[in-house]
Image (cartoon, rainbow, N blue to C red):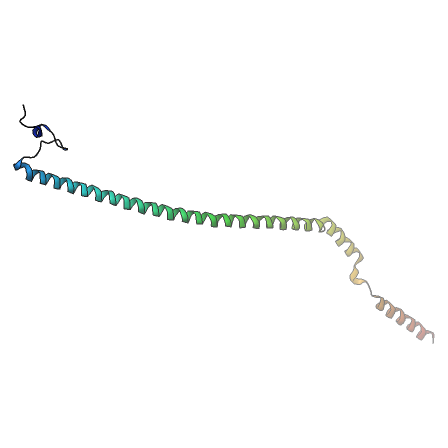
Length: 143
């Protein structure tokens, strides 16, 4: 049977209460625990710092991606406007081309022009001069 109540109680770490010779061991053990606790606290602080840095980096990257997306969306909208403008211009070109003469029509006109040969046509003034010259010739021959 134990002599005192203190001997029967266990400490927080499962050891019996310290006796006079074990005080140095207890101090050494508390120091070891304090160092271990300090090491764990340092590691936790390092992890918190790394987590905070990662969070800041994620926020910065997220902001950059959002900015890039805004620029890309703006570029896409501009390209859509340009494509729409090109479509409208192409429709106008097609309308204008439909109004132009077709190849067959141009060929028919070419045949008529060759047949009439407008290069040999004379002007009104030229005809008047020719007629006047002829009249003058005949008057001179009559005299």
